Image 1 (tube, helix red, strand yellow):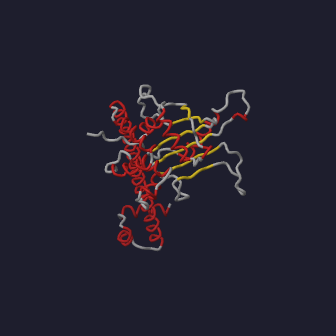
Image 2 (tube, rainbow, N blue to C red; image 1 turned 90 degrees about the vertical axis):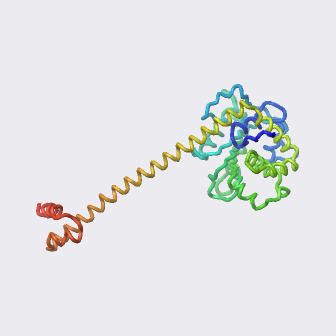
Image 3 (tube, rainbow, N blue to C red; image 1 turned 180 degrees about the horizontal axis):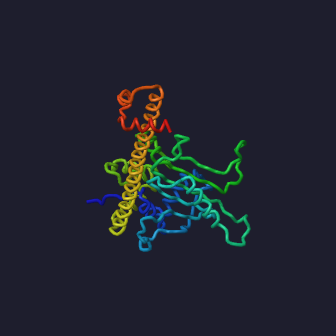
Length: 308
């Protein structure tokens, strides 16, 4: 009986797949990066060095740790890849902060700024944050505002929104129409999902690299220790979602109750103003009580307020 695949969208599994210090991980990560960055020919990444390689024995099990992948290419460029399932932070500022830290790390104290190396951040997200466009892959650089030329090529931030991507591929159900990055994103999004087995078979027929990744994922999924850490991380993630939703619902309920209380208070003030106007116009207390539903005692109190 074959083992159920773990989901590559889980950051622990993603790093175990693409971030191990071994030849196969380097091959599939290089291929993935070349497709995302659209690098061709001599510009392709041929060699990468992991700056924070995956090591299950060193993984502390900290549910809040960030399991990103940091690599250096043969040309000295730095690339950071992060997978996120839940939108729990200001992600735009967060990714710019990560870029700035990585960029600063490319030179040592006392070195010239000319030694700063290009730094790229790639965010794979299973949610949408870029409302300004329907594109699932957006790329950001520093450009002059009116003439759109680059200040410098050292900054590059990618957002890949998998919800948008999934909606797009529904329009092209034939796997033969998918290529390059689309094949990788489909694998990352769908592997481990119930009922996606036929789709995966079609994918790996299209690419030797995807076939290699799928075989690696099968091995990762069979690792009992890693599975247990995966389940613990997924539980922590679901608990956090539940906590946030509970806090939101509680806040909404408290806001509603406060709003109702303030509304009642404002309503009473309005009725009191109406009653006072009627008193000034000479209406009898009984008549005002019938109109406003205030008690005669309450109306007499308002009358005394007017006289004061």
